[in-house]
Length: 381
Image 1 (cartoon, rainbow, N blue to C red):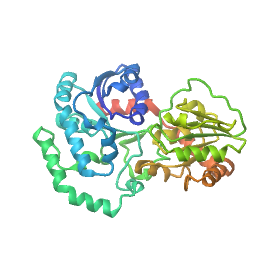
Image 2: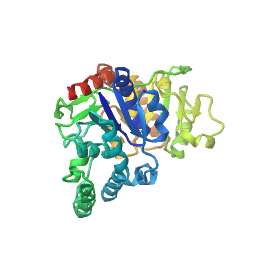
Image 3: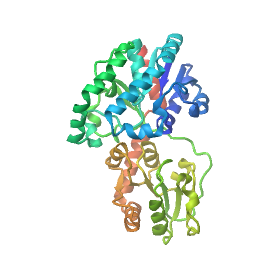
Image 4: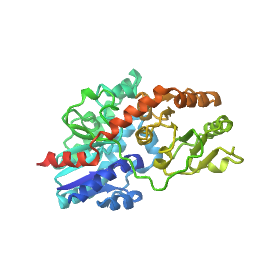
C-alpha cells in the first residue's frame, strides 16, 4: 500500500502521527509524508519518505498568519486557497509519480483533502484534536456574532473557492473543505470515552488513543507531592509563572516548571522549585501528582494517560474545548490564591484522581497505531 500523508507545520499535529507512520512502514507499506524541513528527521526516523513543502510561498508557515486564521474566516479561506495553489504544481507532479492508494491528511491540512478530491483518491482525516461535528462543535462555543460575520463574508469566500475550481479542484463550498461528515474515514487520537458526543459519530471514526512517547530518562521524585507546570512552547505569560513560584514556593511540594525561553527572568528560586526551558514531559508526568496545563490536546492527553489530575488554563478556543471535557478543574485566574487552591483541590479531592484514572484506562484500552494501520488497510481492500 502506498500512502500520501499531509500535515501542517506544527509539532502538536505531527508528533501523534509518527507512531502510526512507524507501524505502517514496519508492516511494509510505503508512506510519502508531505511536511516541512523542521520535521524531516522525525518523519524519516519513522520510516517515511519526506517530501518538503518549504519554499513554495506557503503562507501557513507564518506564525502571524496562523494567529489570525482563527479570528478571520475570509483571511483563513484566502490563506488556505493561496497555500493550496502554491503547492498545486508540486503536489500534482508527486501524486502522479507516487500514485498513492490512499491520502491521509491532518484535519486542518485542508490542501491534503483538496488533493484527494482533485485526483479522485480515497481520503482519510487524521484528527489530533477532538473530532467535530454539529453536536461536538458546541464545545468551541461559536457565537451568533461569529455566524453572522461568516454570512456577510460568504461572497468573498466564494470568490476564493472559484480560484480552486479554476485549477481543477471540484469544490462546491467552504463547508465541503473544512467539515468532515459521518461518512468520512477518520483517525482520532483519543478514546471514545473522552471524545465529546462520541455516540454521534459513525463507525468510520476510529478512536485509537493518544500517541505516548517512551520515557528517555527517568525524572527523580523528591517529595510526596509533585506538581508539573507547562503552558506549551509559545506562552510568554511571565506574571503567571511568577505567581506560581510565589504561591508554591512556600509548600513542601516538588514543583517542576517547563517555560520555554522565559527561564532567564527568574532567579533566586525557592529550593522546592525547578525551572527548565524544556523537559522530557513523559518522564515528568510519570511522577507527577498534578499538572497545570494550557490544555493542548497532546499535553492534556499525556497527563491523563499517566493518571495525573489537571488544572486547566486554556489559551485558545480549541484548548477551551479540552478544558470543558471534564478532565480536571479550570483555573479561575492567575492570582496566587487561585493557583494554590486549584492545585490543592486536584491533589487532595479524590474525585479528580478517579476521573483521571477512568480516562487513562480508556486510553490504554484503545487499539493505538495497530488499529490505525488495520483501518487504512481495510479501506483499500
